[in-house]
Length: 275
Image 1 (spheres, one colour):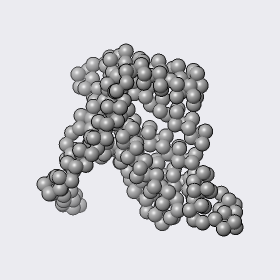
Image 2 (cartoon, rainbow, N blue to C red):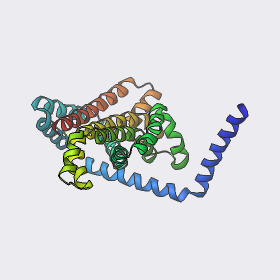
Image 3 (cartoon, one colour):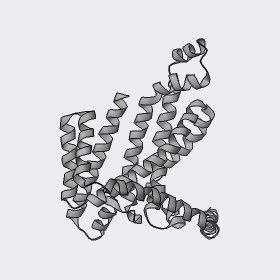
Image 4 (cartoon, one colour):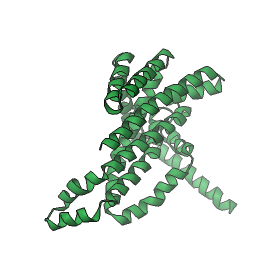
């Protein structure tokens, strides 16, 4: 048994070394693409002054959840700036937005296919179980080996962690379309496309929105962990504070993360209820 484990470990190491030697240009291109996406989102978030972002967030919160939440959300973002963590807060938000966008771009279509194809759903289920069971740190190691330290590595690991909820809940929503409405569509001669866009998809929207919400939450958790690979943002701030026993800075960064998480969580939940 020990010899098998040793052989397996050697094979994995050799595969990583082979990829880093012979496919470096591929991973360099992926890294440039991911960092370009992250830099573009961060540039947009940092372009206006902090108070403009806080006011806009407050207005959105007021529109979807009421005056109280809008005021608290705006004050929370202003507090992040007052603690001197505005660049780190926007960096974390840029990482979450970029990772969630990629995860949804892959996960939503895959979830739709899984909902329409039971065999594909059965094949994906154990893979998704494995992804959600393994410790999140494990996804950082191969990414570091292939792309080094930086935001791109954090994005890869975060996308892997954020995809399963979107796939699962999208597939669930598509499968749970009420039978009588499907039969009604067939009775009136609806095409497959009409059945999907006018019957299946509207019924699946609440479940899909819940999947988007859960993907965001998983992305936030992973972005903080990914601070150990130099991803920037609040995760790296907390990691640096832990190494230097800077308790005050770690508490401030934790508060900023809570503010961001609550804002996006409540807003996406409200959007799901509205849909």
